Amino acid sequence: MDKLVLFNNATRNNLLNKRLGESKFGQHVKMLSNINNIYEQLLNLDVEFVIIGLPEDVGVFANHGNTGTSKTWETTLKTLLNIQSNDFTHADQVLILGHLDFSSELKTLEKLNSSKKKDILKARNLVDKIDSYVSHVIYQIILAGKKPIVIGGGHNNAYGNIKGASLALGHTMNVINFDAHSDFRTEEGRHSGNGFSYAFAEGFLDHYFVFGLHENYTSDGIFKILETSKQTKYNTFEALEVRNELKFKKELNRASEFICEAPFGIEIDCDAIEGIQSSAMTPSGFSVKQTRQFLNHFSKQKKVTYLHLCEALPTKKKANQVGKLLTYLITDFIKAVKA
Image (cartoon, rainbow, N blue to C red):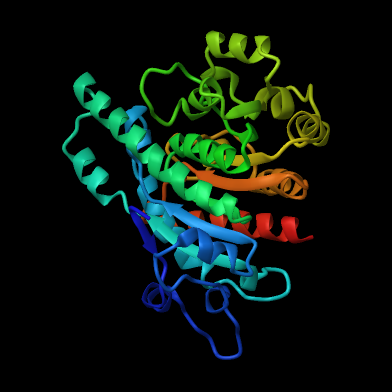
């Protein structure tokens, strides 16, 4: 599979910190031994979850955002591999597939200037190519009957997740998006702000619910689109947490009724979580506890198909915090599905 770099023993041993008397998550996860016939290998493997990394920030750059999301995959692995393996974490049901190698795209990105329209267009063309690789690997995983856990990267990869899942299942997908932004902007060339609008326009996305939109950062045009379409619904962070017009648990149930009757994906953008290093970090957002409760609620639904965690931006000082956060979210998903 083009661009796929398999997770292997060498990488695991380099990141794993063994302790006497302890059994670490990374010691029990599954790996593939070769890159041939990925679909057949996944089909015959006794695991339920497949973790795949998308270390890129091309889509973020193409959307005039802060780059750095390409570092999240390695940061997350360092923490994930070293948590405890026990009856709660289900490491034996997890395959770490590896990551898609976008190093050539990132090298190209280094030469581009986000203030130049010509360079933004080049970046958006790169995102279009990245889409094809992402959708292909997601297609293979879901076709084999497994649940992908996708570690980004930018939110541009929502498009590849939705397209790959839709093609594997043979019908449209629903999505619940925990996000400060709708990412439903115009089809002006691919970037991190229009993955859902492209998926919707191309017939891969059916029902779409945005949970926790920030009113200050959503245009009047986007609100009108979300309000007029029967296939889109939303709530705002301010209505939930500032004005208390809506109740968190009731909104979880309302979103469930709209989304969960058909196969659906869970998208979590770290921009929605207060104080977490991300491409558009917010000083006002949902707490980590609320994020985990949101994820637990939707992960327990029978037709959940994938989880995508994106837009985290690990700096040197905050890398450990980001790694821990994403690891909590990964294991929350696994625990809820297995419950």
